[in-house]
Amino acid sequence: MKYQSKPTLLFLLFLLSCISANSQILVNQDRLEQRIFDLAKFGLQENGETERVAFSDADLEAHQWVLDELTKMGLEAHTDFAGNIVATRSGSKKNMKPIVFGSHIDRVPNGGNYDGCVGSMAALEVIQTLNENNVKTKHPLQVIIFSNEEGGVMGSRAIAGHLGKSALGVKNSTGYTMGEGIMRLGGDTTRLAEVVRKEGDLAAFLEFHIEQGGILEKENLEIGVVEGIVGLKWWDVVFTGFANHAGTTPMDARQDALLAAAKFIVAVNEITNSFDGAQVGTVGRIKAEPGAPNVIPGKVTASLEIRDLSSNVIQKVYQAIKTKTEEIAASSNVTVEFRPLDTTADPAIMNSEVQKIIAENAKSLGLTYRYMPSGAGHDAQDMAILAPTGMIFVPSKGGISHSPKEFTSAKDMANGANVLLKSLLELDKKLD
Ligand code: GLV
Ligand code: MN
Ligand code: MN
Image (tube, rainbow, N blue to C red):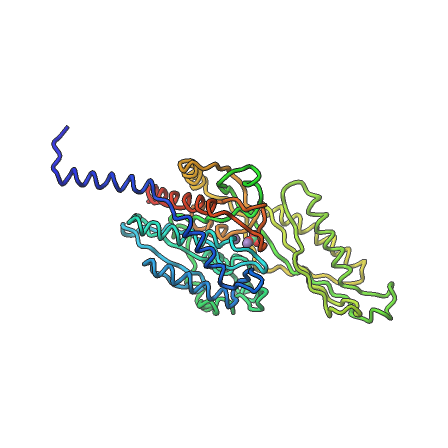
């Protein structure tokens, strides 16, 4: 062996210690869970539950808190024109594309503390862990906390260039339209074109999320490697009859919009079930007008949502529901109109190399895992158009989500965050 000078040996020892330190870096489980609790304070109600629908005051306050946390960690953090938080930790090599990861902090009405929040708080935890361990990546790392995920993956669609003008008019339960909401969050609807990224602008995208179903828990597994995400489409289905006196209008002379809507709800369930496959169809919202016990409802607006891994299946189920509903409307002496809502996401297949990296890192951490589809929508859907994308799932207790009863243990959250951290470091090594 050739003689090594003392400084060379010291340098080699330093390199070795860096490599072994990197392979042992793990997130701080307690700190991650504490951040989940801290985030849940934004929108906390008297009953102990949190409400934080996109664009609400609580959403704006939480947005500012996350922005401040990321800035304190030394990242260049700002709100983009679509209301997303974008925070960049610089890389050591010049002209590298960012490796991007993140999730969302907005919630459905009456939602839980974990959907989106786990991936977002884990993103902060990963950055803090890298900082504490003085790990410098080659690529810049970019955290994105997407705006209004629950109202139609708004922030990610804007980045993918899919947020059309008509989407800006869609209201959520706060009463604000997406356009108004973007302005409230500190974005600017006149400059949305500037947030659009092209395919190849990012090196990769990762999203860590709770499973929101019961498969991992049932099979006693710790990590889900997502293979694909369902597409989802929404419509407002408007039934128009005639509002009249409920006491004096005989049963055979009514144009009852709510009666037609009731038959439509049954048809959605029956028709969705009548096809082979895993497609799902839901009516989750209904408004009857004028809304009094002694008035026959003259107008009903109901929602329709259909999901599947195939756009063709969604279309097939939709057509069957529409045809049946038109028959129901005609026989109920009312009219019906299906109004597509511009809030939708296409099905997305996750990158196979990224899936492999996630699986290998789960294995190297001694975690059990399986490959699985996602029945929930995610920002990763639109990001998959721009870059090789992968998703990491951890168990949801009882398979419950979109509910205040949603729960994921600190250990499971830390498992997922560690897989995220290791997968990011591996992507940093592998990608140009
Ligand atoms: C988003 O959370 C969705 O799946 O509805
Ligand atoms: Mn959700
Ligand atoms: Mn989510």
